[in-house]
Image (tube, rainbow, N blue to C red):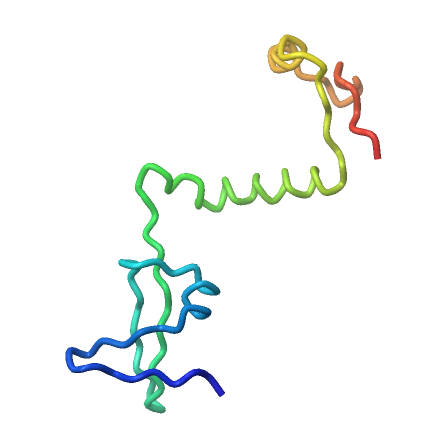
Amino acid sequence: MGTVVWLRAKGQLTLPADVRESARLSEGDPLEVELTEEGTIVLRPQKVIDASQAWFWTEQWQAGERDASGQITAEDTVVYETADAFLAALDDPPSPRRAPRGRRRSR
């Protein structure tokens, strides 16, 4: 069973600190409130994304993030000894048949 909270005069209630921390809620965060057919009240945190950061949450960008995370987990990365070597690799990316000029991360 969950924690019991009391509804105050103006319809306010206080969510326990452990619930706020687990849900990563801060003061001023919006919550969607739903009353189900069974009479259950459901609160869903709604995080507002700044318009200048919305690109990060597109499906295309998230697919790239998943791919990059998989490569890092598999240690399929290249380490460049200098910034110049890294920048040179950007100008002349390796072909599928040629290894990158940096060194492979050791496993």
